[in-house]
Image (tube, protein in one colour):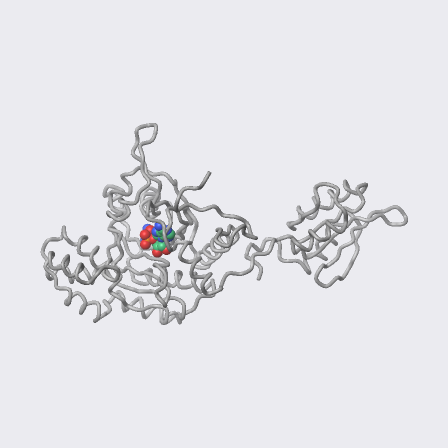
Length: 432
Ligand code: HAM
């Protein structure tokens, strides 16, 4: 039985085939996402993976609506798997914003579903790191979110040589549009043409633009000019003050496909232009009002970063660590009569937060030892009888070969010895 196209199985390492997806790599990415969000003071939220269809038809725009996994459920409701997190988040904030001090700074790591043609950088499900801020209109909030985005990518070892953040403004494009076309209902159509400009054939774009009363050249000149609006200038200054100025450039090619954006918009790309967008986001100051039926009005902005392009980029730059097993101690049971005492030791060690492995059934000592090495355990431990009839734990550091012993049951002496030499047990990051 095969899995559906565009969906993934995630295996623990070592991987069964070179193109299999690694659950260790996925966890590594999630940990970096969460860790950076924490450094910026963001709190985690989540919502339902299945939503009323209407939530997305309201304002996500044709592109996403055309890619929905939607169906009628057994209660005759029109529902859709979430293709993005932003409408869910806008609803959650609209309902509960009074409980929270502003600005609200929240993040999530949802799995999203889009019925796209699967290909390089695009699948039918992906995980997306979302960071959003509500209740602040000042460009300092935009700069804060953009700095977070830059720092997430830096946390993976990516530098200015690897990626760039292209900064743009829907306001600037709206002004451009309004000066030449008096029909606001055509604005989204115009934005869609700009969004596709770099991928579409120039003749096709020129034709579509002329139908709306624009010449290709005036659009190209506007992009070429790249004159930052006052908001963009404020963001650039803010990022420069942090020493992050080199990571951003104004680029009016970016306008974003989603319909709800209202102001500053941005996308992160690899510098060489080999991959699709790593992340994208911007301001959506009207969405909370729209979703709450006018009850709540809060300015908002944020971004989403997918795991698929990011992983492709990290692999190509050889920035993924080696994912070893996380075993701290392998308990050798060489004398089956000591199995019960060994189980007691194993339990004590696990209660002290160490990762412990052992053989579930009787196995020859050399095989147990081999398994300890395969698991890359930092220590082996074995329970031994002493001459006077007591029991000790013999601990061996498998890297330095240093041995020590401690009475069975003296948990504090044992964990002190181990803590000095093992990985910190709660450290979830991968070990190089
Ligand atoms: P988006 O540009 O549609 O924005 O998606 C953001 C990122 O998710 C993309 O840059 C890409 O890395 C990843 N992504 C999107 N679709 C796929 C796919 N089919 N397969 C793999 N990766 C994909 C949004 O979704 C906005 N809701 C982001 C946002 C949050 N704006 C404000 N707050």
